Picture 1 (cartoon, rainbow, N blue to C red):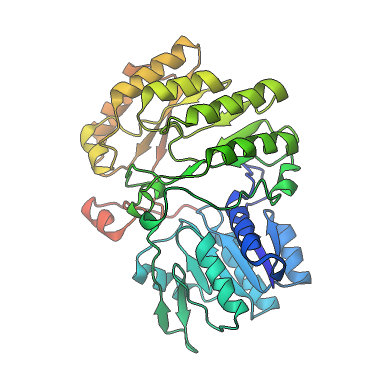
Picture 2 (picture 1 turned 45 degrees about the vertical axis):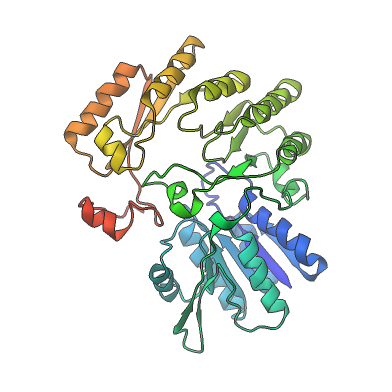
Length: 399
């Protein structure tokens, strides 16, 4: 069975090209289960995927789905159906409302899409492929949203409860199994690392903040350390690395991970910059991690808002401003400039609260303020119809 898995990015103007870690997790998991029964290829660039589809259409096309590649995905699903109407098209990722009725409507509005997996994809897509290998014509395993029947009138979806999963994530590493070697040889790529999944915070505007993803689940520490070594050997000297944990530093073991990264920086001369989304609190540990890794660029501490009422409505009421101030003072003692993110349009925001946030940011001593309009991300609380109505949110589409 031929499978194409793609994490597409527009390649007309270079931006932050990151290795396709997401679909590589799926490839490694499928390979572990089915081995030679599957012929899997990973893609990042649209032109390469287009060429492959035209030459040899796959049995399955799987696409990661984010706000930045949604139109690309729908273009390629139509393309693959043109060359092989029997191809199964599957999308997965956070850029979708996850309620059953919303999933059903999405599938109906996009007839080239056969299946949507809204949360973790490894197990649902493995079950889907297992059904196909067992000659089940219309697979509908748990975690897969589908419209079935001749006229596509029957909607099937049973959600996977990730909170029931083990705290330990025991799945093959996409690095150590070699699935990302090709991308580590590409100097335009940025290596991604993940040591845990889930976020205990509930920011209303963030895809990490939904209840289904609130449980913190850990990958084996020794495997993460081994991945850092592996990337350093296979890399072409990538200057930038990114940890995609929602709250790096939330765990004591993150100090060991930071120490390993520092070791590679000292012995290899790269990476020069390591991007982290720090834990919202746990200030002393965050400061220690910052001291270990260092920062050759401007540091980021995102406050979003300083108004207590707005923070409460946005799901950030447990953010400790004293910890933020302590972290800010640390950077300034190291002669590192610090910027903050401030979001316009948070729930309950008004002119008075926004001006208060701006004044507070200056008082705290931030060197740069990055003020931006909030983006309404499908699947978040804030993007829902209930929140839009409750807070009288008016939006416009910006292509």
